[in-house]
Image (cartoon, rainbow, N blue to C red; front, side):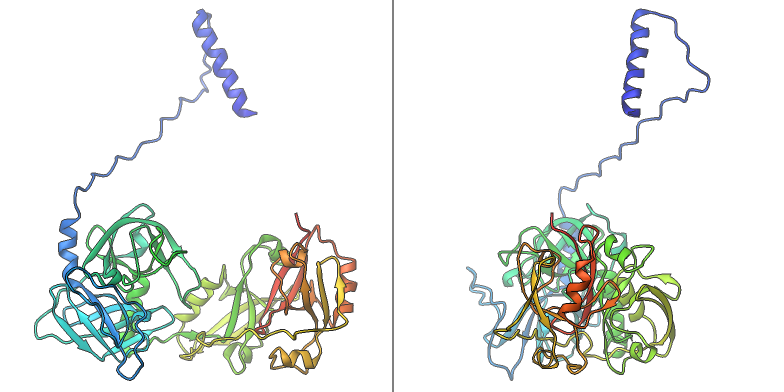
Amino acid sequence: MKRWSAILSAFALGALLMTGAAWYVPTTMHAAAPAPAVAEAPKELTSYRDIVKKVLPAVVSIEARNRSAVSSARLRPAPDDNGDQGPEDNALSYGSGFLVDAAGVVMTNYHVVEGADEAVVTLNDGRKFVSKDIISDPKTDLAIVRITSKNPLPYLEFGDSDQMEVGDRVLAVGAPFGLAGTVTAGIISAKDRNLHMNMYEDFLQTDAAINPGNSGGPLINMAGQVIGINSAIKSKSGGFQGVGLAVASNLAKTIKDGLLKDGKIHRGYLGIGLDNIDSEDLAAHLGLKDDHGVIVTRVLKGAPAASAGVKAGDVIVDLNDKPVRDMRTLQTVIAVTPKGKPVNLTVMRDGKPEKLAVTIDEQPPDFGQEKINRPRMPESIKSTVALDKLGAEAVDLTPRLAEGLGYTDAKDAQGALLTDLNREGAAALAGLGRGDVVTKVEDQPITGVDALKDKLASASLDKGVMLQVRVPTGELTYVLVKKGE
């Protein structure tokens, strides 16, 4: 309405000017705001040659080998017209890397050297070095290979990835498909990507062409500094489709320093699994005034969190009186907290806040790396109960069923086991699946399918019903079920 009033006022003023009628401008009228300044277009580069000449000597190709393993090259480039046959038959993988000091420290991705007992590092000038000195951090997908040279080697400096902005120009350098010395150009197309590929992540996204073999190579800014380590592509074809991902240089620098100092990365440890809260509606049902907080999905036996009384199903809202916005925030802060230091957690439990003191321990090397197999549902389950509101069928979770599903606490497990779901039903639309167990409705425990049906009878799916759900892997989370559109 204000917009139309302004238009009509402007039209009336124009009419007065055209007719020559007298008119009055009040002394309180403000002068029109100046037009916003238009940023001067940056000077166009006609060539990246000076940057490339500076960078290429320090970029390497890496062939990872395992002499004791059966030959299985994961990335095998095709021969080119010059007769380059690529990696040898005993190569595990083929990728890229770059020198970070004159003494011979090469950074690359962990997945480039995973399982290798030696690496062949080839410089852009053709010099080859064979090294067995490989140290890595699988949780960030980063690794270091150290080579030895009689003479100082060319190297690259790290830039500040936090200073990069969407739209900044970058170069990706490496050996895609084994073609060493390849340079592609693009821009930063997004920042702070977290795709749950690694336990700890901070990706820059770029449209510079990245393909298999580019892994471990540098992403370069216009000052010739490394602002990322090319690591992955988002692709349906397996090749470049415009979305490449590079580990941010600030994360890479931290890992480099830790690996060179101690040969491993020391991280703080709570011993819990986490899940984000994915909607404001779910946050409201959990009793959160703001939308911050993370769900504790599991607590490992003997871990610091278990000793402090943290329970699966708790929602961590504050760490040392500072809001916990998401999983990544909490993981990052805990990871850099030294062993033996106490921290204070505020958790929401059944809608009420509780304060818990936890003493941080050092994270075990295999934490977060274990593979959890999703158990199979029994082929046939008789006497199921229809849950029309959810569009699902369920049975009581008996100790026998719980044991068959792999629950470690099978004798004490209880709830309603979902055995079948209608694709268009409310439960399926909310993301529930066959094998999930409903353990609570809102904050009320559910002992079995009859109790669940009773609670649903008085619940309104228009407003949404919060279910606490135990997934087949044994973790707890919360799902808000609402009436389908």
